[in-house]
Image (cartoon, rainbow, N blue to C red):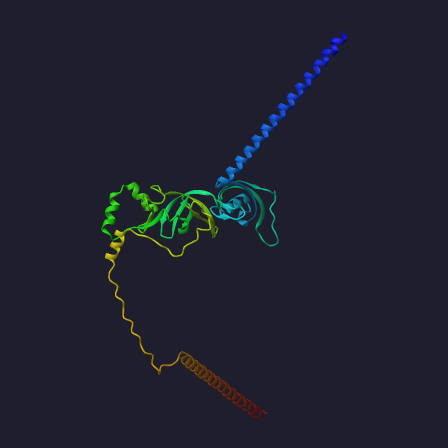
Length: 355
């Protein structure tokens, strides 16, 4: 019996070990799967953050709150944060659109020296619009011109696509008819009101960019155009973008061409030539310079001499006036002295008579 029990126990031990090995392997597999899932989530989050033009940032600032908000420091802090809205903040690397969850990091505010402002450390969360170079965005065209195309992103932020970032192999600028052209009004009235509104928002009478083959305007009927951000321009805390619609926007071949070449249709060119009145070139008559005329340096010297003479005459007049005043004072003083002497003599005579 003892042998049988030993045999059974010997058989059970490897089975238990196998179960333990299986459970450990299952745990390791589940841990690996969980780690892989977390890694994938982190990668996805990172891609979403990179692809997204909006971010939620947690920031901390040292605010100097005015003494008018001494009874309500939170209101003063919120007002100061409101002044940052729609401004580009370099520390946040974007334009602040909104803020919330304001918290004071210290229970007390500090007042330094004679400055009555309360210094408070605060933290808050801000929604920031932070596009980066190389990102693809969509904007709506609001201006066509021969040297650039202007867009609006989210109906707020300005974008400029210069001419050298427009593929001129496929696109060309077509000038529009003049305002006094009778055909201009007929074309405008023949369009539907929806198209007229789109044209008013996206184009001007000066012209538009059209495709060379199809004749479609840049941006389509709705005016929405996808572009690549190639630069950021910050002026007065306002952010504007520089874009490109080239297939390779960062290629060194896309160099700005200062000589702007524009093409217009033959009909518009003919109409402009017909409307243009002949230009009369005025005759240029060259007048011979008189030999007796004074040189500029001579005239300047003469004017300087005249000014010096006037100055000396004025000084002489002032001196004469001062001398006259001095003489008058002396005469008055001498007359006063004579009167004083006469009165003194009269007093002496009276004293003698009385004695």
